[in-house]
Image (cartoon, rainbow, N blue to C red; front, side, top):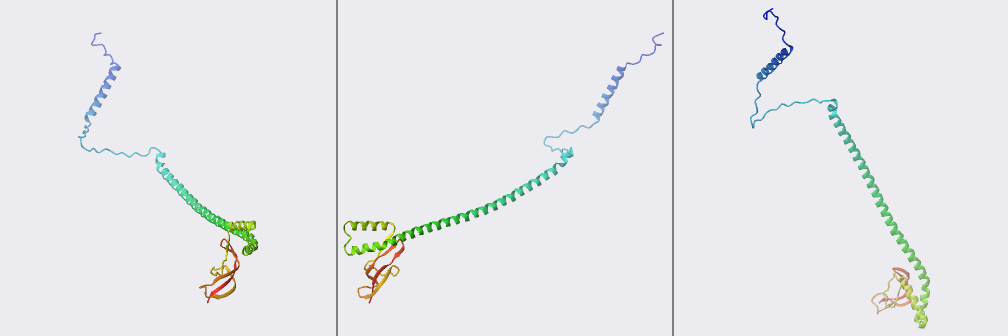
Length: 226
């Protein structure tokens, strides 16, 4: 058999694969050449960019605005509740402050009343004691008028009068004093050209004061102007 009469050998599979790849590459290059080239932006030119709105990826993102609104409503309600509670606390504080002021004023008045009553009690007790000693002082005055207050007896009398003076005892009533009906008790009245106003011309018993309180009026004879 000659070489021409021999059957042709089948092509190898590798060759067929290479030819297919070459055709694919050629097709891709042809399509790339067919696409118009995009114009490059000129420097300084404003280029409009495409704006794409993306839909929420999930239900949670879709519900986020509702949750934010609900949270805001809850915060507003919470703040409103706090405001109401604060107003109630302020009202209660004002009431307690007024109560405290009223109690403080009442206590201050009570203390003043107690101090005043205590002073009155002390003054009344002193007046009772000193009033009981006034006859003794009258006897000392008569003894002085007769010249009997001499020696040790006179010294004791002066010490007694000085001690009573420390308790607020004050003696009044002397000849020549203007007549004062609130302090003097007139037991005799006569007229005289030597006086220009009612005047005490004789004192039968001296009067005594305890502070501003009259313990006993003075017994006097009064001369009225003619």
